[in-house]
Length: 297
Ligand code: SF4
Image (cartoon, rainbow, N blue to C red; front, side, top):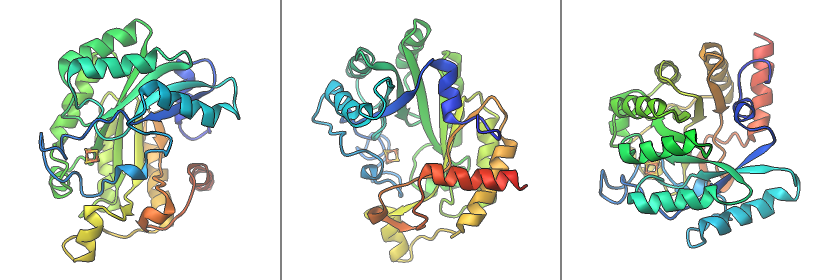
């Protein structure tokens, strides 16, 4: 506990006795907002390569990707245990058997104690949720993270998310009812939104039965539709300073109840991919700045 809020390490310590590391897995699944199932073109800001580590290659099996991740992290911390993090694209976007096989392979790895599944709120079939709930209750630790991004439906439409806030509420309640820990992901500074809008999204999120919340600043990335729309004047985003963003995060800490862990506050895509903002900070550096602000307020 950093003294100001429950962070992700605190959350993991409630579930696991030792040090845990998330290992990203790219299971080669697509996204229904790209393959035409739900929409086309994807969310305007999305560039998946900005957050998938180089060791994650979808042509490698889940086990191989985990082994490569352990080679990377295990040298420094030999006692470390791992969580398989199905991160790239939409990790519930396939047939039930294929999904169960993928998750099962990760959970069967001898160094893995649980899995985290990142997905969209409109892509969680009840049958899959029931299976995952049974696994979780029988000791196979599972968590679901949903991309919510904002509680404003007009923004969700503007950024081409192709789901609504009602979908978020529905998915969170069903996941919580299945007894599975659930996290929500939000973005501050989406097109048409102010920092107050981000605060209102946080308020809406923390009113739901969630376990973790993850917020980050919008990054305009090279190769995204957002970048080309800004370049041609079809879209715009409100620029805010790092100082303003730290103030926002301090207010979020004040509002977030102690039982909800705050996973992170910062997106940090490779600098060469980032058009704006150019903060160039690591998570721990931002956390120090935020803690200083909280200490002085
Ligand atoms: S952010 Fe997620 S839902 Fe949106 S296009 Fe990218 S992978 Fe699909």
